[in-house]
Image 1 (spheres, helix red, strand yellow):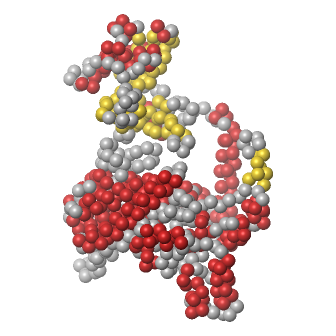
Image 2 (cartoon, rainbow, N blue to C red):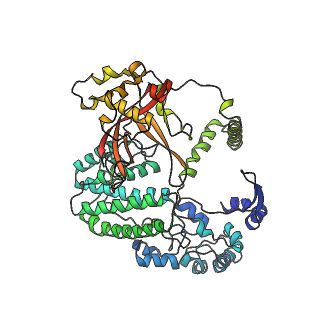
Image 3 (cartoon, one colour):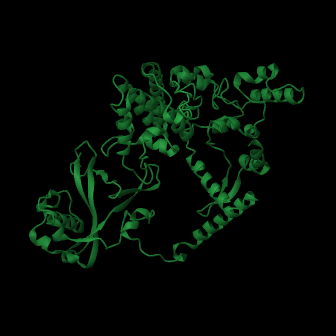
Length: 567
């Protein structure tokens, strides 16, 4: 790894890092650009390789020199002081010790584990290997500052995974009904967003089989019903007897809160301060969970951890007891410590997802010389992408309009429009017949009256939260619904700008149960609650004619038919 980075950090890179280089930007202006290395997202073994320290050594953290026996104090005042005062620095003293140990091995012929080498490096868990990034030290770069907490590897796949596994062990100790309820509640969790929360395994979450990092993230932020907070608290609530249930709820709440704060794309001083407070509470709750809750239950290995079952009735290995150790077994997982420079946590998911491309290229390449084959395919894909970028949509072959069944697979669409709704007119109903199809259905009572009031409010610009008597019968008669048809859709996509000024899209999908929305409150400006809540029942569009508005050609009006849930 360091040999590869030594090739990358050549003289040209060093010159660009120190003095920069002129580059013409997209706006046509020429600016001087400087190379910088901000963050290197990796799992713990790769971090130890980058930091050239020992895995699970006496001071196992790649960013600080907190002793291994002090890790359980995570979040305490003592722990914060140790992390700040003992942060790793790539200074002259460290490089001198490494060089001294290196010479002792290669010049004097001592072994790596000799007492002399250990006396030099063991206290800080360093390895007798020069670090390539030390080339940047004269320019003010510290290799240990580029190793932030990685949410995927250190929170989702370590802290949360370990906690979830032991919670399931406790549920096995409580009884089989608790496991059945856990699986049932997770099955009730609806999908959310564009791949944010996906459907859980129908064979049971408690088996923890075939789970990847995103699945563990979904398990943490899952909700048992649309009205619940977006976290795993409702799923576990009441499954563990009191008083442990309350402690587990507090632990899950603080872990979910820390996870959500750390995943924010814009982090300021207030956010860092709150993350620091939550980390303190989380560390205290983890210690209580281990010292109070875990000791009350005799827990064993999960079914997936069981040894191989004996055959032919022979006696084989039995289930072994399995305790809980959330801190000492995870030396690098003090969630989001407050770094001296205020660096926020990072996520390595984008880099990890890129691995699938290389694996796909390998399957398509010749297995004899797969390196050359993968390189050729990668260059070919790059050329096709550049061609498509320069050609634009006008150079692509025309495709047929998407059918109603294809609405779920539609892309992001034009980001300049406020929303996207299907254009198909295949699915439709007669307005009058549909309104009277079910006589006692309160949803359909006075539907035509309410629909025309809404359409007139849209066409005339009047407020849309009034009563049904806002428009007279004569005004409603002047509005004509073309062919008296309602054209049904199942999906509506809303474009919006996120808090970090990025384009994003939310989806209302009746087919998948993504139908709960909230909108800003506009009826009473003195009301302290800022939102209204509703559930979308139907999505449709109508074509209308309205003579007073000088609409001589049929005009499409898109409608969401909702049931208000309250404020």
